[in-house]
Length: 505
Image: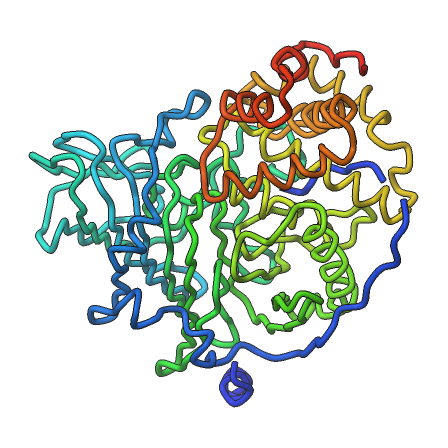
């Protein structure tokens, strides 16, 4: 009876733990225009699809040709985790139709893709805990095999360049996959997880999306997404992008979501539980939605204050926000992750004294919009986010890391000795301190070399000129040298390749 009452209220209401940085002076801004709502049917302006772009064929979202062009990538094989990548396939759009009853995930993934080369078979990541039951290519049944957390599809005579539609029906009880990391917040595994209350959440860097849907699970293959999540009881499904509303289908609740910019699979998220949506508006007019479980409602005021302050500061120092929506979902686990347009944070991460939310917001520019082409470029993500975190804390005069970047040297040196230099780290030590601190100190050395004003212009231009692009060290070095008129190659290489922390200038 309780779940029926709650659903009626919902419908009637219309609805990577960041590593610690260092922390001079602005007051904390209050959020403006804050309202609190519960998940509901969206207004027409918030509809997840538009008749002028995507259309629906039956119950499947069909992207327009223009949208599919936005999803084009140049996939590569990963030098660190090659089994997670398939460069023969460029996924353009995923439509995920998911149902969760608390035990079994029932899904249908409709994947629009192009072959990048002539091939008789393609492979996607797909957990062995999920069993495919129906596989069609362009409406016709095809043969397939499942093994080693993958599904291999027989596609005789598949020519490069053409656009195809692949539909995979599947079901199972998802299981997380081990993380290639020594970090304490990764011991629970990557991908689909449930907390002690049965609520679903996912952290999946550098991989793990394959634990709950078939996917080319690699950052070089970004795609557009639509999702529909069917849940039971009080539960509500949360995903990336624009919330398209909640509807009732018999005893089930269904939420719909639309992502209108390309996103890498490791930056997708899912959360399922008795969530309530709270919406605040920043000074620039962007709505930030906060999705909270009943146990986490006490976090709302602090999240709204910090979210408004951090976002406003980033608009000034990182430039125009690269996406159309932004949200935060608080989940179980012990980490935080920059999942694109819907940041995923554990309660512990929210309660930390350092600016974890700022760190994850910064990633929307640096890591999500500008994304490394492979996992050798992890430093491209974390160096910028770490630098912005300490800059923000210092700018606001917060005492947590008042020592600034100089306090990082001993930590970075120890991490290099244990896990290798940030530009060539040990693949079994993913996301250690070396890829955070060393690259952030490298950026500080570039700032010293070119001056504060030019540096601020440089970091804004980097994000703006590489929006929705995959980049690597060569791209970064060439661009920095061209932009500054100086040859900073040796500086960059020294900080990324040295087995010990270089001496500062």
